[in-house]
Amino acid sequence: CWLRDNDYVLISGPPLPMLLSGIYQALGVPIRLVRIGKRTFSQEYGMSSALKGVQDRVSTHWFMVRGIPYRDSVNKVLDDQKALLLGIEHVPNLAEMMWCVAACKAVHNVKLLPHILVRTASTLNGNSLHVGEVTDDGMVIGSSWRTFKSIVLGIASARK
Image (cartoon, rainbow, N blue to C red; front, side, top):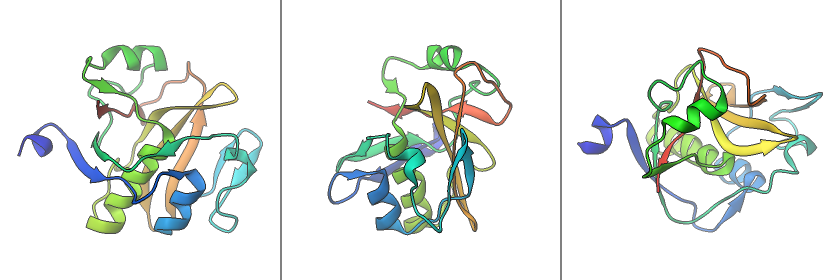
């Protein structure tokens, strides 16, 4: 299958457009405690005020996203990661990636992004927001500087 051979998954969007808080409520996926600046959010409080400023939405269409970081994008700064993408691809926002990662786990019991994080198109206070796999403890979400690089941080990609 072309999708699998190219590390893509095809996921349907939600029945109605949703903000971040709606994704958390619709799929019931807890959020793993992650520090964002000096604030935290956890499954106990759902989505705290730390992410309330992020107005990303996930729409009702189908998403073709990579289940792993874009090839050769780990251990690079954000601008270098973006330069790797082909013209037919874009970096999805946090809500889109949260939906795809959580829905794939909830519906198909398949973990996307195993043991790795990907940057999204979303930012908070100038930092890029990233998402990781869904584990028994919840979904990993965090942030990093645009100039931060790590062997466990790549970039998310989706077909336009």
